[in-house]
Image 1 (cartoon, rainbow, N blue to C red):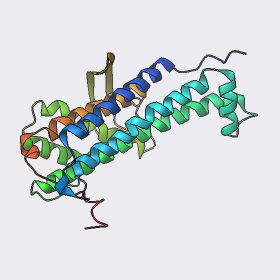
Image 2 (image 1 turned 180 degrees about the vertical axis):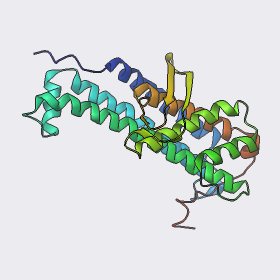
Image 3 (image 1 turned 45 degrees about the vertical axis):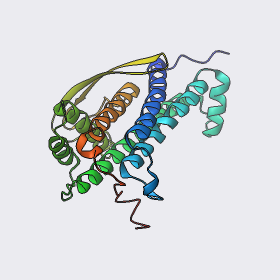
Image 4 (image 1 turned 30 degrees about the vertical axis):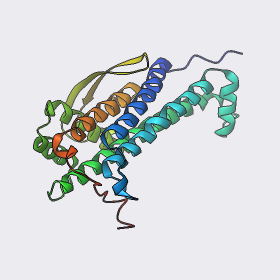
Amino acid sequence: MTAKKPKKNIQEIRSAQEGFHLLASWVFDLKESLTPKQEEWQERSDARRMALGNIYRPCLTTPILLFNMLNALGNEEGLKQFAYLMGMENDAKNRENAFWDIVDWVLHHTILMVQFQVENLFQNLWRELGFVEVRNFIQLSEKLIGYLKIIDGDKYLHRLKALANLRNSLHNNGIHNNQDFAFGISMALERDNKKIIIEANYAFKKNQKVVCCGPVHVLGLCAGTVEVIQQILSNDILRKIPGPIMDRYAWSMNS
């Protein structure tokens, strides 16, 4: 028996799956090249290295989860097993809806994890540079990028603003409650003769449901944010800090 045709475009998910696989490799390479472990740090972990490691994990697990989900959707037996695990053996009508709900959950969890790690990293860097804490993520990003004189800073700030908007909307039942905002990301992920082109447009309308949180949107924003981190951690001012830079959460228990 052939499985029913899915209601959504699974090719978009397949592209996101492959894209996150490439993104995980990129993040791992950045971790080892920008924040190599130093012997003199002993048991201390540098906040820069910790942030990249914690971004690497969801980027690594997301394609694995999506791969398994796509395999389940691709055949009737897989859907039956999925329905059994979901306790929906007698509800075939809604099992595909449950599938897409889980796909959305995986993507939303990924974007939330990335946003938290970026915000925590920026707080740690700002403190290390000798400044007082700035609790607003957008204001903090503006100050940090301005202080480091990052080239194309406005482009990167758009990405961070969209990251914050998505995070906020997920805490607000999917509704955007700030001012209208729109921009696009165009970039490529490439490694070992594999290449994914990302073209994603983001539009946030005040008091309206956010509709730019699909697979390619999440991949694009995660990849675009990693590029921001790369530009910041490659800055000469930060590269000269010997480290380890304290992480405000991880160090509190054993300082």
